[in-house]
Length: 174
Image (cartoon, rainbow, N blue to C red):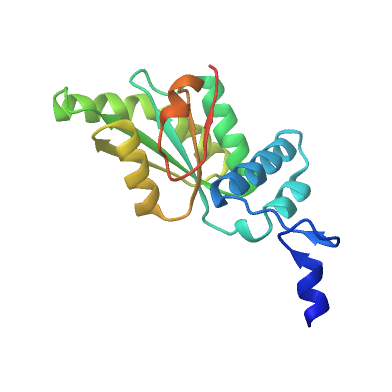
C-alpha cells in the first residue's frame, strides 16, 4: 500500500504525477475535444471522449440575441446536438426594457427557425423566455435545467472573459 502512495504523489518524486486542475477547465477541455471530433463526423470518438459526461438528455443552451439566431448558429447548434445526442434549449433574454408581449412575440418568431430545424433533424428542442441580465439568467437557467453541458453564444471574446458563468461558453462568430 505504501508503494502505491509513493508512486501517486503530488510532489516531484518519480512515478505517476498528478496535477490538480479545476473542474471547469477540465470540462472545457473535454468538451472542446468532443466538439472537434463531432464537427469532423467522428461521432463514436466524440461520445467516447465524453465518457461519463455523456448521458441522455444532456443539454446545449443556445442564447438568442435580439435579432434572433443566425443561420450559421442554427446549423452548428442542431448539428452538434444531433451528433452528441444532446437536447437543445433556446434561451431568449429580455432586459425588461420592452413590453412583455412584444418581447414574447418577437422572441417566438425569431426562435422559430431553430425549432423548425431541430424538429426536422429529430433533435429535442425547447424555447425559454426570461427577463434579467444575460449572465445572471444564463447561470439561473443552467441550474434550473441541471444537465446543461455548455452554452453557445455570439458574445465577443473580450466580453466572455469577464463573464462568471457556471457552465462552459463557446462563442460563434456569425
